[in-house]
Length: 258
Image (cartoon, rainbow, N blue to C red):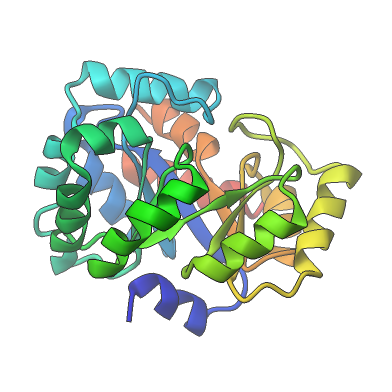
């Protein structure tokens, strides 16, 4: 069974997934960050593939992606860095990136290398659903890689149910239609959206992402889903700690308790 499915079968609430950008703050930061997050009890990790035009990302992640590209991060380099990561890291690992770098790398080779290097799922924000169904889903299933789809407050019920019916892993609930970035709390409108999805009784578990940065947002997200995804907050803490993944991971967990 895929590690993503195993995680959600074993834990029904409070799952914490953390996103960071490969190659930031330095080119060789990737595996130390993965190991630090896993050692601190994070249950899943999303590894960002840097791209020059990350349309869904806010300024913090855009800055990280720009720096990672300047550092020389590529998909080839990332896969090389991930060699041997499964010797000591057992939690699910997900790659998050845009279509362009994946297509340049070669779609079939990309999923094959994901399997080879212990990647469990991928998130491709700009992948059209029809292209997912026709091309990407068959390839991903061949290598037991879950493709995670995103929904927003503007996504229709019909489309949400279509995604739920044709994916297997979890659904990424984007908290708002805006780009990524930390927020202090979720307003009534966002919480109404969380309630609406929760009441749809989807077969897939959901994780809420975008805007989670403190105890209040973490607890609100966890109350309406199986857990949450944190990105911008961790990247900011990583930069504050001058790249020290141990300090950043510890500070993140403390921020979720305060």
